[in-house]
Length: 107
Image (cartoon, rainbow, N blue to C red; front, side, top):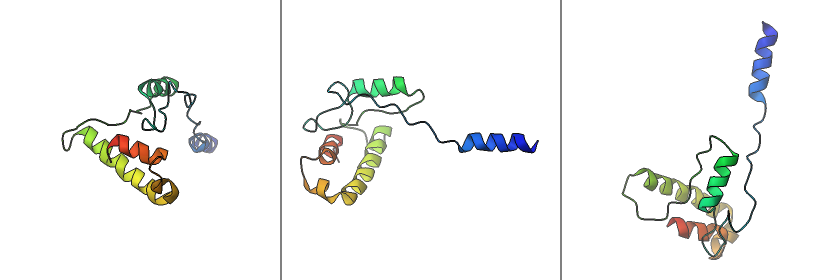
């Protein structure tokens, strides 16, 4: 009985496999000028390669206040604001991938 408990706890402690990322091609990732981030095809490929993923594309259009998309945008903007603090060099450069992505998300 003691060994079965040990084995089950060991299996829970095993590290998770790294996610499979799509290749960094024009088809799957936007250029920095066009707003950085993944394309619709890139997100679809990622979700095929990683079953159970909930990855979605950027919220770029107008949204109703308090809607799910508005909350996603607010959350992304808050997270990326932290990146701006962590990487002041990228924050100062208007053409950095971080700044372009924030512009695309309308932060």
